[in-house]
Amino acid sequence: MFDKSHPKKDLLNFIDIYDIPIEEPNDIPKNILGVKIFNCLEEMDTDLDWSDEFPEIFKAEDLIEYLEKPKFNSELNYKDRQNMIHSAKILLNYCRSGFLISNTKFKEYDEIYALAEKISLHCDIPTCRRAITEFNMDSKLRNKFEIKLSAKCQKELDQKNIKKSELTNTMGFKRGVYNLSFD
Image (cartoon, rainbow, N blue to C red; front, side):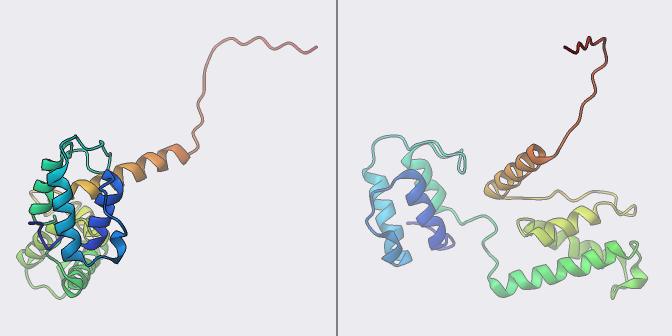
């Protein structure tokens, strides 16, 4: 059975990407939709079309296995997510005030480190990612935090960087002898 941590939006996305034959999936409740997806996937005997959004999924069994596992970084509900963003803003305040503990509510560096450790687990949230990136610039920090991202978020960031680099104007200089003639 599919894990309840996958939102209906993701289930609809899978139906669209892999052309799963379910009629009017938007009108079906999430629990029933998950069961229908599982039934359709179990009946499929062909490989699924490759998708750049989910490059690790080739077969129906791979998608079933993916849906049975809890969604990465989905343990946060709305309130917890807002609290995590607030904590990240506190860490950003520390970083932007010159990495001085005296400008924050913290008494020891260990408290700030523990907060950063907690924030680093949720780097799919842009504010948390920015906070960890800036915190890694602290000279008092011995071991830098790794920014942990889900595969989907990493893919979106890579695509964003590619598009950004394509739109950036570049100018090159070439040296050599050139012959100009005017008619």
